[in-house]
Structure formats: structure tokens, C-alpha cells
Image 1 (cartoon, rainbow, N blue to C red):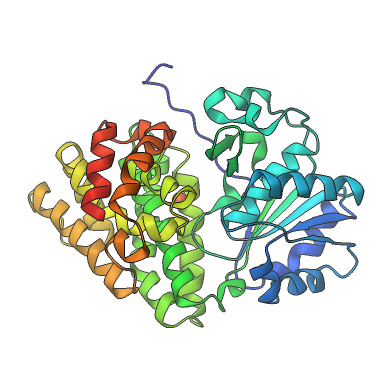
Image 2: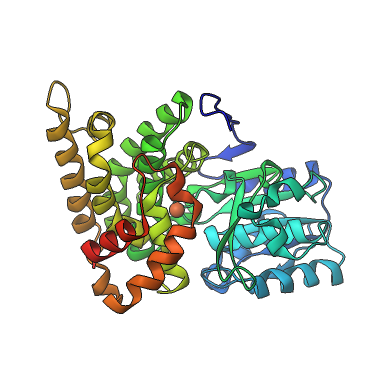
Length: 386
Ligand SMILES: [Fe+2]
């Protein structure tokens, strides 16, 4: 691919703001859906949000499917496809954080695309096998982190690849994203912190990723600004609708920005979920300061822009000083939101590092990291964060 050519596209129809869920019935009708599979998870159902969705579109015959794990699996997706077919569904409403939304995207794919799921693996050029022949899908976010509701990819644990596998296609973007921050008001502090750190990391990694995409860059810097200001408030005052609204926007902006690319933080984070069973966003937050230290020799000037977006005084300061300030501010944020700064605090042990480093190298996110990263660099980064 020619490195001087950039490709970008901005997302689908987004209905954003407190009360947006009230538009669900109209959107389902507009899409011509009568019998959607409602893809969610048991936690979302227990929080009463599936009932809120059903109440928002009382004339719709929802078929509930809540068999989605925290890190969604092939078995979850295959069960969803089976349910969609046996119930003769004609569309999908996805409700949740990244896990149900990603599972729903792959269920949507599977009902019209017959190949084994590993054939759609992005690393095997799977996107070439994905067509626009997909049923309509409404994606409703219940967390502010992944931004999957405006994303074109899904991450699923597949047996054949034995890793968190990215399935990517512009066709996978939901028909409508519905972002209602009122749905996040009841999220507990730990989930708010972890998901919010994911949103922050998307914006930071997107800004530093290789490539010329000033539109994504501008979005990423504003996303950083919103996340830094609002995450501590959302964690400590869960009922603060303004902070929740701004975090949902930071999440959406991160997902739009990271079509530019991500970086080493995400490559390191994925095995911490698939092997270590940890929460994706929380691990991103712990890793981010270490990855920024690794990256700073090649991107201190751009870290000065991040310092300014964070409200730190980057103007006129030497770039090295601004980069140090950014890293220090992120470490401070971890303390403010109650996330530990060491992976060992979450049960990760040294003997897990070789296997995780190997998997991290296989993950494509690091290919757009501003500084090339080897397997031994990956191991050193895990060691530093341990
Ligand atoms: Fe992420």
C-alpha cells in the first residue's frame, strides 16, 4: 500500500444525547424491522436496561439473546446465529458494552455469510469476503469506552485462530448508533473507570498512530480533552449526567479517530484479556504510561499537542518536558479513578509474559505504532507494567 495515501470515512447515522433511547421505535420502523434479535448480556439484563429497550419500542417483537461472555467467543456467536434463524428474525438490536456489540456484529455477519468465521479474520484478508448483504442493525451503547457502536470491526475469540480475532469491514458498521448517556448513569465506579480508560487510550493511540489523517487527529485531541476532564467526575459522581454525556462523546470520538490506527497498548492489552482474563480498558490504562515512555523518543512533539489537550502547559515548553507531563498526568488519573498501576495487582505473573508477548506480536494494532516494536520490546513492556 502507498504510505502517502490515507483512507477515511466518517460514521453512520448517530442519535446522541439524553433521551435518545426514545427514538428507538422510530428507527426500527424506518429500517423496516419487525422482529429483531436483541443481543445483550446477563449484566445488562440484570441492570434493567433490556426492559428499558423493550419499553422504548412497545410495538416491536424483540427476541432476547443474552448469551454473550465478557470476552465474546465463537460459541456465543454461533448460538446467536442459530437463534436468529430459528426465530426468523429480520434485524438486530445490540445493547451493551463492547462485548454484546461486537458479538452482535458477527452474528449479523454470520446470518448471511456462510463461511467459517476464521475466514473473515482481518489478518487473513477476511474483509474481502464481507459484502453489504447484512440485515439492519441498531447499536445501543450502555458503556462509554469501546465506541463499538460507530466502529467497523468486531473482536471475537475464535477457536481456529486461538486469539482475539479482529473481523473488519466498512459494511459491519451498524445502520444506526443510538447513544443515550442516561443508560450509563447506573454503571459502577470500576466499570466506569475501566471503560473510560479505554476511550482515553483510543484517542491517545489514534493521535500518535502513523499516518496522515488530520481529521482523525483533531477528533482524537478533543476526545482526550473530554476524557481527562470528565472521567474522574463520572467515576466519583455516577449520577452526573453532564460528565456521563461527555464520556459517551469521548468514547464515540475515540472510535471514530482510531480508524486511523491504534498502537502497542492495544496489542499488549488483547492477550491480557484472552490469556489473563482481565478487563480490556483497565489493562489499557495500566499499560498506557509505559507505552508512552517507549514511544516518546519518536513522538515527543506530538505528545506536546496531547499535553495541551489535557490542559497541561505545553506552550513553549520543551517537547521532552511536555511528554513527561502527559505521562505523569495519566499516572495521576489512574490514582484518581482507583485503578492500580501494576498488572501484578490484578493477578498477572511473570511466567505469563512469554506467551502473552508472542500473542501481542501477532496482534495487528502495533503495526501502526509510531515506534516499531519487537517481541522482546513487548516482553520488556509487560515486565515494566508488572
Ligand atoms: Fe480498546
